[in-house]
Image 1 (cartoon, one colour):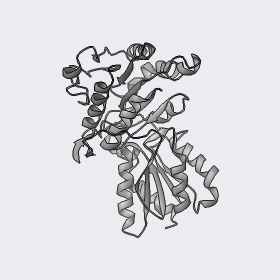
Image 2: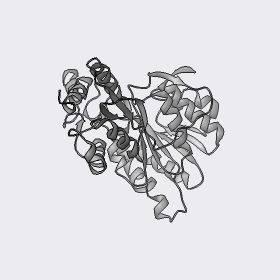
Image 3: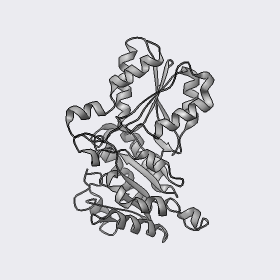
Amino acid sequence: MRTIQFREAVCEAMSEEMRRDESVYLMGEEVAEYNGAYKASKGMLDEFGADRVLDTPIAELGFGGIAVGSTMTGCRPIVEYMTFNFSLVGIDQIINNAAKIRQMSGGQFPCPIVFRGPTASAGQLGATHSQAFENWFANTPGLKVIVPSNPYDAKGLLKAAIRDNDPVIFMESEQMYGDKGEVPDGEYVLPIGVADVKREGTDVTIVSFGKIIKEAYKAADEVAKEGISCEIIDLRTVRPMDHQAIFDSVKKTNRLVVLEEAWPFGNVSSEICYQVQEHCFDYLDAPIQRINTADTPAPYSPVLLKEWLPNSGDVVKAIKKVMYK
């Protein structure tokens, strides 16, 4: 099995699906001539031409509307946002059109479209470029939301998203595009809505997703020195959420820590906490702990940014709290 970068996994997934299905095309800012802002579409213009790899103006509402409309003529667009912070300019097309067309047309118009790009913080980019929107989109019936954490999952889930007949929000990270991981040479597609147990454990369940899950791995390594065994679940898909995978793990470990790179009010970790207390309350030996960013806009100062973001030290403290240590 070869080792490739996250950006290469994304590029392979899009390219393979465009070879397989001529109705698939890619559009977004700098996706063509520049090979993508993060080089996730490198070489695609040369292979597929300007009719299927389209550079757009800086007009997310406009090209988002074009993409949604094109699904009604049989196309399967992939829309790249340079960052999901920019999706707010075009969010009306996502929430009020893409997510609702199937229901509002009585099933006459499916909307097979993928909106993809980076989410959450990426270093010193300031408050307006460091926001996580997974819970925003997951709050919308009709949308599926995927947040992979490694190249293998990214490729398999992106291929599934492109083939899906419903709109999919596919969220990446600027800080993961250079991450390397093992990816098979052959064809594979991962199911949407299925979490993955990345590490087996017996004492504490840690649930996370996206790039922040790296902090969970570090914390698990740290507490393992003290004999604490952590089970780590990567949600991979935020909506539909694999509740059963979480329940099964909590029933085994009896303790839960949820790690999410997002503001604490009304987010994905809130939903997980509700579902677990509703379905697994009698199995819990300690109150659930959740770890989020500070409840403020992201600071620009690197010193403050470090304090704002969740880290492995925060996870270690939460693990020890549920272990009463």
